[in-house]
Amino acid sequence: MTPFKPTSLLAVAIALELLIGCKPAVPAVAADAIYVGGDIVTVNDAQPTAEALAVKDGKILAVGARRQVEGAHKGSATTVVNLAGRTLLPGFIDPHSHYFSSITVANQANVFAPPAGPAKDIPTIVAELKTFREAHRVPKGVLIQAYGYDENAMPNGVGLTRDDLDADFPDNPVMVGHVSMHGAVLNSAAMKQYGISAATKTPPGGVILRKPSSNEPAGLLMETAYLPIFASLPKPTAEQEVAWSRAGQMLYAQAGITTAHEGATHASDLELMQRATAAGANIIDIIAYPFITDLENVLAKNPPGTFGKYVQHLKLGGVKITLDGSPQGKTAYFTTPYLTGGPGGEKNWRGELPFSEDEVKAMVKKVYDLGLPLNIHANGDAAIDLLLKAHEYAAAGDLSRQRHTTVIHSQFVRRDQLDKYVAYSITPSFFTEHAYYFGDTHILNRGMEQASFLSPMRAAIDKGLRPTNHTDFVVAPLDQLFVVWTAVNRISRNGVVLGPDQCVTPMEALKAITLNAAYQYGEENSKGSLETGKLADLVILDRNPLKADPMAIKGIKVVETIKEGKTVYKAP
Ligand SMILES: [Zn+2]
Image 1 (cartoon, rainbow, N blue to C red):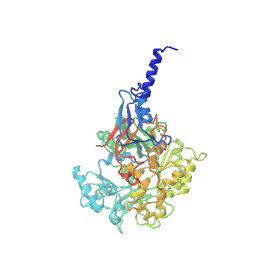
Image 2: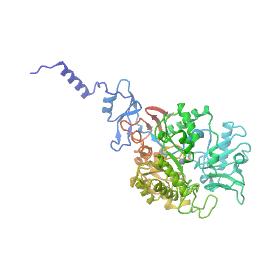
Image 3: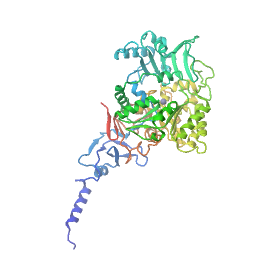
Image 4: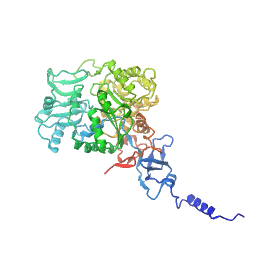
């Protein structure tokens, strides 16, 4: 009989303790925090759910069974976070919005139509502007701005004009931003300030709405007629830059977003963002796409080699080109006419482009030759035809290489065009919220059949694409659960289900704002799902969208947002 040795006794004791779990061994790597006590939706098909998630140094240390994760990683300094029945998911990744606008809208009146805002009619818009003027004590002569105006939501489709604004605002320039972000209604003082009059010619690709049987501008300016005004709007002072940037990012963090998108960055905007970044303003990641018109200016200080890398949470993602406008503004470019005519009553109106085919080809080739990802805005099927032609020209010889080309909106893409996306490794970033906000308008403008194939997420997924889905903030509010709700339900304001065959599952809708969005940015190795080694970018929701009644998804609330292990937002 072999006598017991003290070492083997110790070994037996440790093994026994581990087995019965009364005294865990000191973990090899102790986590900063371990989340337990609620559903964990990993968005990782290989391990869809988990009981526990451990975080260390801003990264995910382990995902799995609670006993194993706690056994291996619970140290004396580890915080155990009890989800108390709430649901943990990867932080939302925003595939397309206008972050830069968030910096300024904190200082504008919200005139979104209900439910996103109060503006149910023109008198309400005027009242909101007056309330804003009083609340902010705006002095005479200073510009007053609003955002979110949608003429399609106005009773009887009668839009806001300068005359509606002039009576109450004789001394302040007023600009009521159109919900598409591609235009605004100006009062007379603003027209005077920006030199718009009966003598102003409408530029190609632009809209200046005129008064009936007159050349006098009525108020609404869109697209190229509006762009110069937009570019010259007042920007925050140096002192305001950091505070406003943080306030803008808080709008994203409140929505559970840990990576934000800046979808058309002008050179001066980028400089502001870089100054704020250097001053430590950023609480989440921001990916900026400089506008093609400003590319030379941007490249002078930011050569192509600096793209694709985060510097203090700010990354240059690639280049933005905008082809057409918006379908609700009737500026999206189609192969067939709008059933309701043009924005100024034009017959056989198909929308139009500010660029020739050769110009678009040259722009796309320039971006591809620089080796930079391209984000290209195209809504109508004719604009999409043109971008596919431009791709064939610019990518000749290697059409299918993954260049991270993303078609922003792709709303009225045809089935044959989706096949080309597959062949050319092009990703659609859809906008299913349009089904709700503008679906009824699209039915009138484009007919039921085409409207039903709006942002066809089901068809895209079935063809093997990895679509993303966005708010286009400030076009729609930052509300990712509403994005999911519209992808799952596709219900219009009037209750019409727009293309029931294009509805997707809640998990597919979640992927479009997490893993697929990470893929759109080439960041799928570090973001988009809860997997060991990825960033601890997390969101906690009050309910699990995979278990909720699909119609109730829009009521799910963000409880907490965590960026690289640090809480950046907690619901009050
Ligand atoms: Zn946009």
